[in-house]
Amino acid sequence: MNFVSKTTLAKRCISQTASVLGVVGLSAIATLGVVESASAESFPGIGDDNFESIFDAELEILVGPLAGTKFQVNNLLDPSQVVARSSPFVDGGIGVDDIGYFDLSPDSGLPTQIKDSDFPAIPDGFNGTFQETIHLQITSLNAVSPDGQFRLLAGKPLQDEFPEFFQPSLGMVVSDGSTGFPARSFFVPYTLIATPFGNLIANHKQYANPIIADKPLTQLPPIGITYETNSPDFLVCANNLDGLPVATFRDLRHHVSDVSTSPPLSPPDLSNLGSICPSRSSTSVPEPSGAMGLLALGFLGRFYILKQQNKA
Image 1 (tube, rainbow, N blue to C red):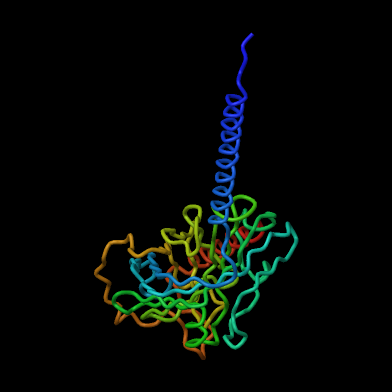
Image 2 (image 1 turned 30 degrees about the vertical axis):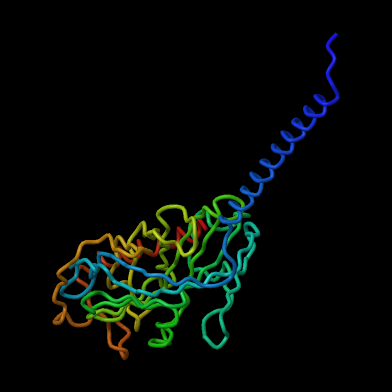
């Protein structure tokens, strides 16, 4: 029969106790690490994001003597775009008109709250989800082409320069899980496009066409993300908002990045193009080239957008 001294038993007890404490300690550290990691992936609170934005698109004129003319409008730069974000909230499900609240002064003239019903269009998978959500609002956008011929205005710059045409530009971030990142995102950027041939409006009412993030967001601001359209943006004249489209943006891309992915261009000379929009005293649209084709295009555009809205 083997006898173990009290000293040896004491040493074994101490060793086993230390091992258990070591495991518990490591487990606690691992748990803290998980909590810290989860915290790093949480949505930020109410506030705003300031970042550089670059826009590229192909513009096609639909009316007048240059109907069918296409050219690239690349590298429109805003070095300091601002997007306000609401407090995160959990989507209430189908039929619930969720509200996002913004930290904006009432004196700013910009909406301090946005409801789901304020969006002119919401893509599939972004509403009625029961997932954590953030409403977004572009509060400042003034992107200018390198040659100065084109500008994109939204938020406060649009409100200050063309108050009669102002409408909010809205967006959304929705968690891919129950809460936090990764997440999907879109914008419906109601924008005035100042061009040498007239001021045009993108995303007006029935022509609302969301731009969707090309990959999941892991942070806000969404640096490295490109927002893209899946179909043409139909543009109407700012002074004839209920008229048919006079131009389109195709392959619109919004790069939240420091470097544009588009090649440098030699912009076309548009100085002698003239306006494709009616004067303020006129309610008619310039006579299109191939009127029936333009009417069909306009109705197809309206059908596509209404179809998207009905899906949402």
